[in-house]
Every structure is written in C-alpha cells, then in structure tokens.
Length: 302
Image (cartoon, rainbow, N blue to C red; front, side):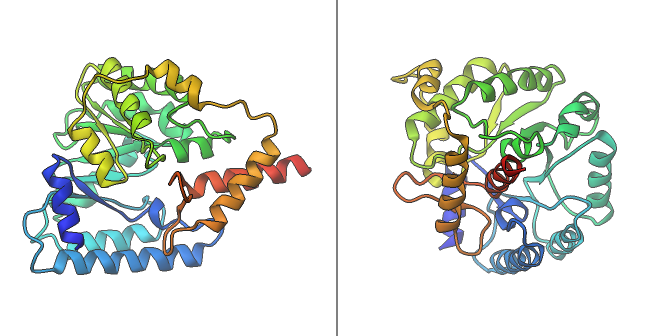
C-alpha cells in the first residue's frame, strides 16, 4: 500500500520524502521522541527492503548534527548505499556554511548516494547567516533552499504563529526568496498545514508563481496537495490579498487562543507522530506551535 502511495506521488512529478525529524518530535518528552524516531527508522527500513521497492523517486529529512539520532540516521542511509540513490536529503535547522559543508562531507565519506541536499532555513541563526550559506554555490548538489516556518516561529518566539495566510508570512518570505534567487538557488516553500483548504493552497502557489523568477517547489503533506501542484492553474477566484483578509483574524484574547491550541493539539494527536490533526477542517497543529502556546501561557503568569 505504501509503495503504491509513493508511486502515485512520483506520477505527479514529485518526490516522496521520509521525515525522521519533526514528524517524530514529541514535545517535552525526549525519551518518547527517540522511541518514535527509532520506530520510524524500522518502518523505513522495511519499506526500502521490500522487493516491490525498485526505482521510486524518494528523499529523506534527517536529524540535526548535534542530535544523537543523526548517527542512527547515517547508519540507515549507509545500510542502503548500494541500493538507494536519494533524490534529496533535507537538512534541518542549518545555521551556517561550515555546518552545511560538514553534512555533505559526512555523506560522501560514508558513500551515501544522493542527487542533492536541501538546507532548511528555520532558525534565526540560519536566517542571519543565509548569505554565507548561499556562497556554497560551487557544489553541484546544492540547488535549492527550503524554509521551515514552524521552527522559525518557535525560535523567534512568535505567538500566534505567522502561517501562509498572514501578511507577516508574506513579508518574511519576500526578501528571503529574493536573496535565494539572486544567488542562483531555487526556493522551497514551507508546508501548508490546512490540508483541505485547496483554494488557499492554490492561492499560495499563485503568489509564489508571481514573485519567484526561478523555478520553485512546495512541500506537500497530502496526495491531493501534490496533485494541485502538478495541475496548477493560474485562474483563481480570489487574490492573495483577499485570502489574507478572509483568513487572518485579529486575536483579541491570546490567552484563549493559546488554550485552544493546547486543547486541540492534545485531543487530536496523530498516533506515533508529533503532529495533531483537527477533525473536520483537518488542520495540522505542529509540536512547535503547541510548545509556543504553552510558553505563552507560562510567560503571562509570571
């Protein structure tokens, strides 16, 4: 069944990516996080070992260098170095050029086969040092730079979060995209967490199409989002400005908003994963936003 799902993603001109990092991040519980990540590696090992797995186009998102799970991720990649040629390896929370170079060196020293690495800018240090990171253009495996808005909001202590339908998100990615493209890279947009909001998702694609001079990519979370990218059509019923006006709400009582985030997260957790998915609208709540809501309530009590 999972092999068929990967194949369907590939048929829509997209790469299926395994996530060993945020998908398995359990807030305030390192032991459980490590257990979930271990289980995920076992699941991926089973999939990659399958006789049905042949020439699917796949990528993977690994843990950061400073995390003990990183070495376990490398061992997983080494186990399949004769069989798997990774289309991409996503590198979370990249902070500087030397860190990026170290990642690539480790992959090559371990004979891991890959087409490209994609650094994810999702912390203040990474954003501050982006020009230096972008100076690594000589290596052919560096073509794209991704943005991760949940971790970035967490690191910047933003609350409520600046999601795709906010003016703050647009103001943030505009200069980011300009700098990325000026240095010859392609932009990879952060995941859109409203899984059934297809109109909003398309408007997000339309905005990217309007401002990106180079090719760009969108991280998707469902097969339908992947299909929308593949079938993208510029004729839309709302402009981006109207979408922001429609979806952005003034948070008059942030305390209630934070309490709702916490309640919705805890009551809608996806088993064995770090994200929650609300019923009805099927909107994902990230573990980072849950942490920020908890921190906000703690801060206002001081």
